[in-house]
Length: 271
Image (tube, rainbow, N blue to C red; front, top):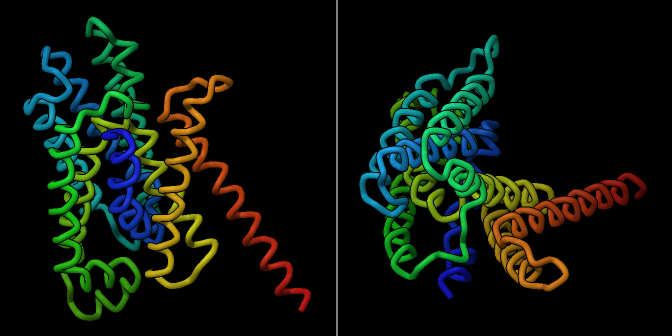
């Protein structure tokens, strides 16, 4: 039951954040922050802490907030060096650092696999109860300041004209984003976080236009792919870890959504 609840409840906020990430065109920021959070976990493991220890969470969150500050400061309209380039560099360097750190631990290969794909089958009820309040807090802040967050994401020129401090609000956005990533990466790993954030948002953008519709469609896609991945992972013919199975299910849904959009555009052109 905790595994099912994790895959159905927690992606709800990730889908909303994913719509912001897609619109901001910083697609790999979640992957980079997730890898930064994973590096924090690796450092804690090197110090002989367990994944669920508060020291592990503290290391992971501290590094993630530092990454959030970097991404907030470097978000500019200067296209000489796109922000995606910096995001990619952060991801590669932290991934390499995580490998180096885990190489010094007793179970390096197992630790690396856990940071990538997690293990939702081992999620306990206490893990869920520790994570839900964090997600609820982040959701509450986004509801409270939704106008500024939406303006900076979907109408940045208007936000600039109104004199809104983009760097401060961007830091708050990325800090909250990092808090979510830090809480989820210990459960599901880097790949599932990226998939839950990006794939439903992209699928919804293919299929519908308004933000509300994209939220609803994205939530439905995340839930459907989660159920399909969990079911497929349990089939004797597949017998696979549920995390990668859910990621593959999301990939299949993305292909279907892309085909549906292409077909709809073709029909519209023929009319």
